[in-house]
Image 1: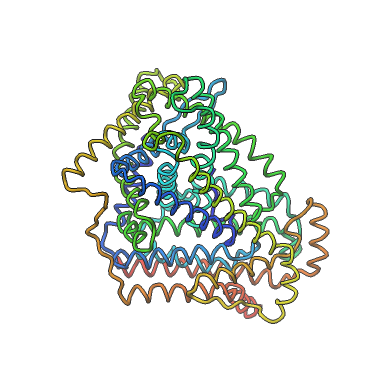
Image 2: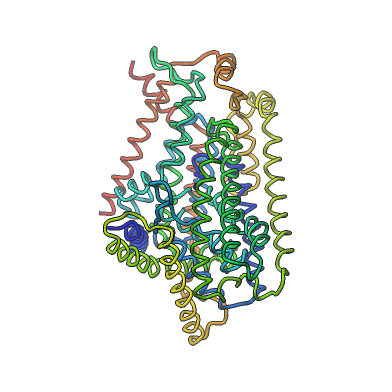
Length: 340
Length: 270
């Protein structure tokens, strides 16, 4: 499931961009250090493979519906976790740019949800624990299913937390979790079965390709740096998210203090940091009924918080909106005519 | 046309757009990339109940699409295909958030509907900006810009490779899927027992192809570094492009332009 720009707040989007960027830098360094230049074309072609394989459907046993591969876990099994993360990130980037999946701000969140969890968490911590080098077929199948399910559950949890923390959607945490986790349990099972089917086939045809991710370094040597990386990414995310969470409760106080003096915040054109900080403050300027315990109390609260609705302002907004769109359309036509 | 072929067609058509020589295509890719990122950040920075104030920002994707001669129909089609998730999540807002928000005569509109409308506007703006960016820039130039902006080389090389071979492997996958379908007597998707070997063979071919590519690259003196002939030139027009648009974004962010406009109009009319 792709996260969308429309549901993200700037703070959450930026936090996930930072976490994903740090993970990317870490993985890029590891891949460079491995120094296997064969990896460059191999990663590229396997990225194209995942891209193509995602579009081949198969029938899900015992149901009428069909599913397809996500690919994160499969890539980790074939390439090792670091290279797999980079490949998945590239697939998601192309999808965001060409197929409108998510958007540019959500790309950080999507790469985190669909890349970090399957490649850097589920693969080393679950798949490798169950299926060590030279594991039997059934073991590989079980490992794939468990790792894929875990990866997708974490990913779904990520989507839910990011959406709720952004507070653009009104869905409460519990409801959204109940919607997302069961769906992704099913998707995870499908992903696990598909991954297992492909891995088992490759294992029969070309056994040398399977343990590639671990082969060059011997034993379990690559687990420790991997864990450090995951821990760092988790810390960064947790840190940023808690920073975000801690600014939420006192948002109302902030707004009471500041609305009087600084109505339209000055937005500087450069200096992303100061700008994002201001956006963050803007964001914290949310009335507290944004987090309703339930719909009823929310409605009551809101009536209390917003006693007067100015009909004049509403109509002016709607008329102005329509006229604005008409103007934008007009500009487009003029630009087109000038070009043509 | 199968799903795979449709996707490949989309890839090709967007990149073909970027190959044409428009004033926008001649701008430095970094300027377009940075401006688009600022644009997305500004759009999502608005309060969740904002609808009208977001609308002036539509000028950016619309103007770029018009100048870059991006066909509106194909943009719309992509937007519709990509919409479901944001829309599905947004549809809960009217159910959960019933605080009164707008009043038109006697009709009172709940906050949930307003925020749903806001989600839709945000979706259209952010996603169309990303699509227009690639349509007026092209993958190769964009990767060069990413590299110059400090993105790790491993990743930009990966993007270029993926982009190059998506067509090759996509075509292969499409032919395999068609061949299977023709032999399956009209049954829908592959069973798992068929799926494993089908995709497995695609994967084996991918491995072999990667090996051939690597040998070919070595034969041409590959030393682990991807070199590009495309050089980016930053000119005054690029600075103007960024500054001009950012000034507009700042104006649209600071002042609720439609409200002002509507105030003038409704104040003048009655």
